[in-house]
Image 1 (cartoon, rainbow, N blue to C red):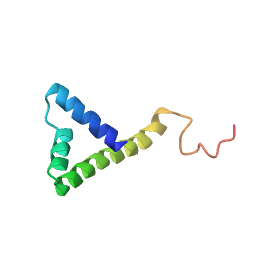
Image 2: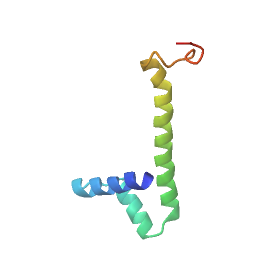
Image 3: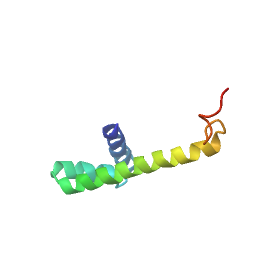
Image 4: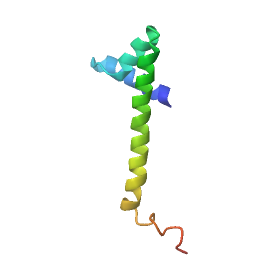
Amino acid sequence: MFGEILAGAVVTETVFGLDGLGQLAQQAVASQDVAVLQAIILISVSGFVSIGFASEIIQPLLDPRIGRNARQRKY
């Protein structure tokens, strides 16, 4: 999945002429710069984990069926 997102970033940046992580990753792979690739992966993974954690926290607030006592209820 990460590869697809990175490829999408490269295509988007190329089409719109933007400089970003996709282009930086492409240059790092071409020059075999491992430290830059590790930093890009760390930033990307941190973003995915943060978004996942935030969705886990926000979901019970938006859906009353999910909550602290959801497993104790008997329908």
